[in-house]
Length: 249
Image (tube, rainbow, N blue to C red; front, side, top):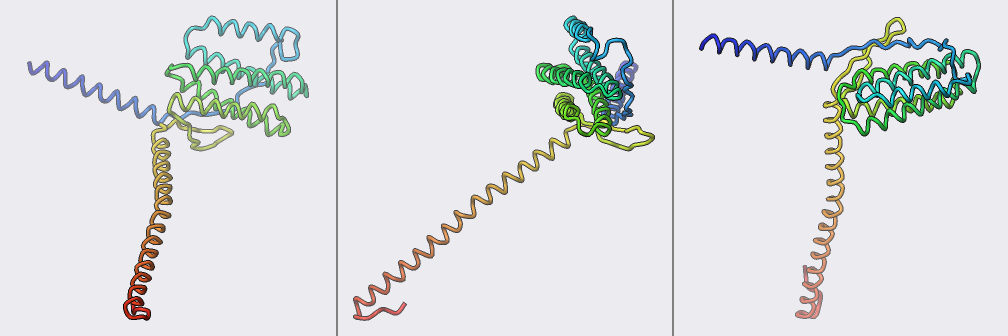
C-alpha cells in the first residue's frame, strides 16, 4: 500500500514538473530571425511562359493537403518563394515580372488570412514565425526599393496576417536584441495585453459616466437656487400685502 502511494506521488510530481516545463518553454521561446531568402535562381520565374503552370501545380498540391496546419505552412512556403522571385527580378530590374510575383504574394497571404478565420487548428506558432520572417525580408526589399507601392502593400498584408495569427495563437513576438544582422525575438502570451485593454476600457467607461453626472448635478443646483428665489419672492409679496410695503427678508 505504501509503495503504491509512493509511486502515485512520484508520478504526480513528475507530471507537475513536465507541465511547468512546458509552460515555461512556451512563454520563453526565443527565435532568431534572419533575412535568409536568396534570389530565385530556378528555371521558371515570373517572366517565364510556364510560370502559370508552376503556380497551378502549387495550387494542386494544396488541394490534396488535408491537414490544416500543413496546409497553412505550405501556403507560407509558397509566399516565401514569391519573395525569393521578387528579389531576383528586382535585382535584374525586371519590374513587370517582380510585380507579378508581388501580386501572387498578396493573393497567397490573403488566402492564408481567410483560412485562419475558418480554422480552429492549434500548433500555428511556427507558421506565425514564418510570417515575421517574411516581414523582415519585405522591410529590406522596401529599403532597397522605397518607391515600390506593391512592396508596401505586401508588407501591410503581412502585418494584417501577423495580427490574425496573434488572435489564433494568443502569442506575440517581442524584440529582444539585434546582433550581426540577426533579430532575436521572444514569444510571449497575450493575456497581459488583453488585461491592459480591459483596464483601459473600464477607465474610459468610468470617465464617460463621470462626465454624464456633472450636468445632472449642475441642473440640481440650479433648480435649488431657482426654488430659493421663488420662496423669497413669495415671502416678500406676503409682507407687502400685510404691511403695505415690501417685507423684510
